[in-house]
Length: 281
Picture 1 (cartoon, rainbow, N blue to C red):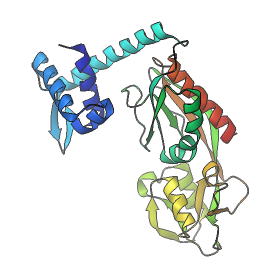
Picture 2: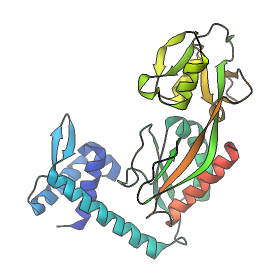
Picture 3: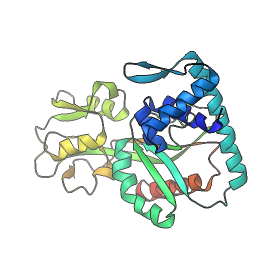
């Protein structure tokens, strides 16, 4: 068996479809299917089955994925040992964060990182889900909550994100309904704050799943809401209704222990730390 084919097994397990795995590996879908079939022939077992349109690992597949992840970690450790912190900053780094952080903080500042490290490719994944670093769904993650302790994942708090109440710039906030999150996100601190602060005031007939979308709704005059100050302050379509911060959320940076000494990872971590210090003091 070609050990390089294990990359395709891992990509399919993490992406869920051949097409998504192909995009992740930057190859065509036929290549992924062919390499996966080669592994299954070599092992004499079917590794995935299609359920509701997605590829799910069989019991044999779960065993193969676990072994492949161990091989992947060993390769990462080898690269770390050979390359070290003095290696050239080049290659891809996959960074995941909630959409408002990606769209309002990371994307606008990414030009500076690219100018400093032209050989670096930053892949930004705007996703509200907690993608797994141990399963290599991302290399670095920014999270709004203290993560649970996990093997091989390093976490440290790098800042606080302040929230305040905002309304539309060209409309009085009096009588405006409250904009809040959908039911799946009712547990968030900002959603709970809104629920307590509104008292008996009405809620807009519109529930959203991201702070960026809520900001757009406020800008459109559909209501008022709690928003992160770094994204809302200075926005010409928004007006801050209360100068004091309503609440703050911790911002945590997560990296995989096996990758932390790689030059490209260290460069992005340093950039993130400096960016947060400058924008979220």
